[in-house]
Amino acid sequence: GEAVSSERSFSARVGRLLLSSSPKQTPRVVPCVKMPKIEGVDLLPLTSVMATERIILGSSTEFVKQTPSGYIFMYDVQFNNAGVDEIEVIGYRWVVVGADGHRTIAAEGEGIGGFGGTRPRSLPAGDAARVQGQIRSHTSMANAEGTYRIRIR
Image 1 (spheres, rainbow, N blue to C red):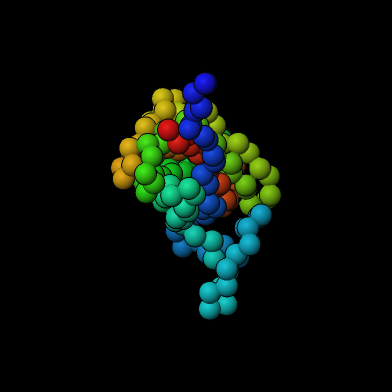
Image 2: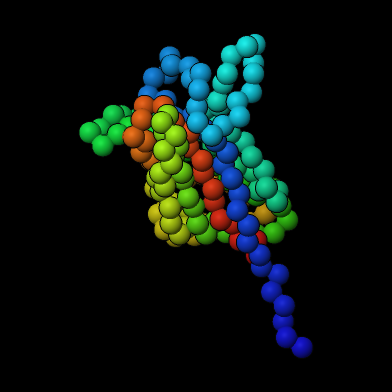
């Protein structure tokens, strides 16, 4: 008989993160996000932890600088493989939703992305990896939504 591959792929979301050029600025309205109420204040997280298929993604963002073309933010994502199989991070996509509601693909490509480049990143069961990169927003406050394509081996 023919060998059947057990490989499969899925998308793992980072979640939605706040991009703000001012650490003192607390957003009241951020587009495309259902915000939780905490003591009567609308908040959007600066950090996120999401789990899909026993792959845990923890992430955060930080303002870097303002340039003539917009606002630069650093993202930091940690991948934790809590599954029993080896995984491979094979692609990424970051979408920024500006304060005006305009959506832009800030980064997209093959591999792990960011400063990790275009090469895929393998993670044995129980292992972790980290990637950092930069994305740009045309507004000083925005949302960032990250998605990574994962292959289970």
